[in-house]
Image (tube, rainbow, N blue to C red; front, side):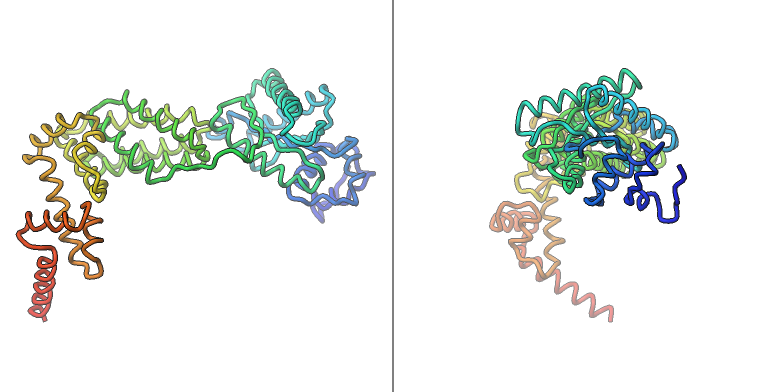
Length: 433
């Protein structure tokens, strides 16, 4: 068949010239899929559409099928190399559905590396358990058949039922949402759309404050094995919170960047650290499933640990860098104290206290109080801030306690110190003029 390309394939398809049917079933399936998910099917041409697609009725359900190994394959080969595999799976799905007696339209969604299977299966809603079981059995059968025929593993996202062709765009969105949960379930998953699934509740600050410090602590102790436990706990939190796949990947990429920056500041070779981080970020972004992430995190930690083993930093120097970083990031929290930093360092409070005093020469509580007072001194130079705001930002539980500690450390009240600093600044400015 010759197609006039002047107006494009899609326009040709939507004209539905029944005399041009022969030999173009694959083309018509693909164009039907695109027209359906973008809501462009013409109601006036439905009869011709059904003839072109060789089906007797419009599908009422959408399966979205993904190749579970797509990330591994696409990182190693040009994108076009996946097309034969995709079409092989399309053919296998079509053949199996035909054997099951299920009318269907199956096509690739080029650019998404997924396959759309529009099916007609009796039923009205997934809330009916018998219907849901029937749909699940069909999906499970397809997964097994595709693997037997192509040796490729697939997962399937399932929409709710469509009562008309105008609901295909909605079904497409539901399938994408459902299929995103295969990221948590692993390969060969069947995910049926459920609008009641909980929304993500993890934040970047939660992630950074908790896990970054734990990884640094174990790396400084050359304990890569403990990093695996931290990684598994982190992944479990992702799973419980239903964190979106892209968010999970970006959070881990951000973690790698933070760890790299930390050890760059600590004096490790920046070039080597950047290469390790770059390779690890690429692996994370190409990661197909949540369960694969701990291996990548531990590999990253092992490479960092090798750099640490070859560095000239003493354990005391690494301890000081870790402690200073913890204090800088957590000191504004008035609840942060000896117990907090000991926990972040995986030590008992008594052991941490002895170690800190040996390395720093002063007790931790005294050092932290001095740090907060110095921070308050800098804040007092900002005329727009009240004493209450300064006390809170410096990590004091109340303004009265802040004033008491400040006077004890400096011999002056915060207001007196502020006034003298401003007077001195004005005097120096006058002398300069």
